[in-house]
Length: 464
Image 1 (cartoon, rainbow, N blue to C red):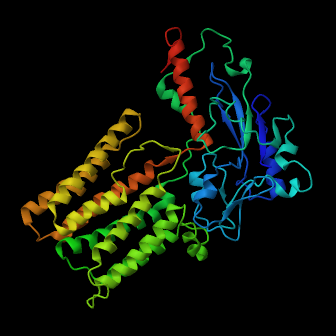
Image 2 (image 1 turned 45 degrees about the horizontal axis):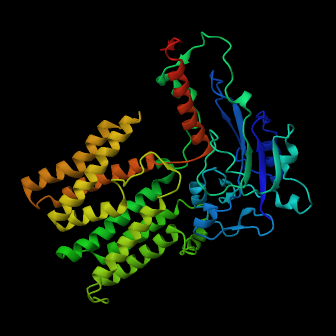
């Protein structure tokens, strides 16, 4: 029987008793609690409700963490429906936290693996409620059997991510008298859009360039290696097989720095049926080994170069799919730094094939330009100076240098193009944002603040 949390928004005071009870019961690392309290409108802005969410793992019926774990370290308990992480199988890749819109899986900095709420399975076996439920002094947090219609009755709940994965939680909505507190004074001020941002919290990101630089380096290196083999097929350029193999091997080892349990890295290929991470690793490893054998002077693999190249592009396609996550925010269209598109452009550059340079270069510049325009329209910093440098190094300068010198400075042309691609790939990780309860609260609160400001803008003075 699938179990479920029951949470009444009207009763929660945000006292954190449930969080402390969870920490004590499960002996979690201080500061890495499996349950968190998120407050909607913590600044008590007039006209917008103030309430709290007590959130942990919702043990979803269609749990993406379990579905996409490359190491097959997550399973569902047949008796309670609890989604559990096996500590002996987890590789600490953190991908389960990427795909979870409730930010439930937490990285344990001591054990270097992922952990999360287990429904306090040991207590359930003793017919006791989870510690968080028992520790709630107001009765806001309850526990029972999952009801199929639990979420359909919720309709829209500001601050609660809903992505269709069937979370096992029943939320009791705010009563009408709690939804919009009445203003005590008709002279209450509203905030300008500039000041609204200061009232909106929850800006933590799951992914950042600082944390994911090993993946940025590896994915760009992979696109270069596939482009080199493709260029060798197109124009017969010479690629040193030893450097080719060593570069790929070093890139894979750099990417493994992202793992909490590097010694278990081989487990990442186990979920090849559903995980794009597993497919990426299998395809790229196959490409690297076969590419090395093909490039050897003895030509062990004969005329199979194009087949190996296709395998390489399959690996790059899988890399791009790793980041195609339900709940992804911000720029959702094709990204100019996508490794598949980048590799096709680089193959044209390396081989001197102007049709490829023009076609794929155009699409890269097109997606880059409209993405920057998107950030500008949404009020984000488009980083104009960096954008100009990226376009100059990646497209303008190489063309000018080639027209002036031909192939005399081909190394500088390649380095300039790669520098531009490195900037673009770095921006990808800097801009990438995934859904969490904090992000959902931030976005919904911004909408409600703007709506409230619009409704009262003609009556009240604006804080400048």
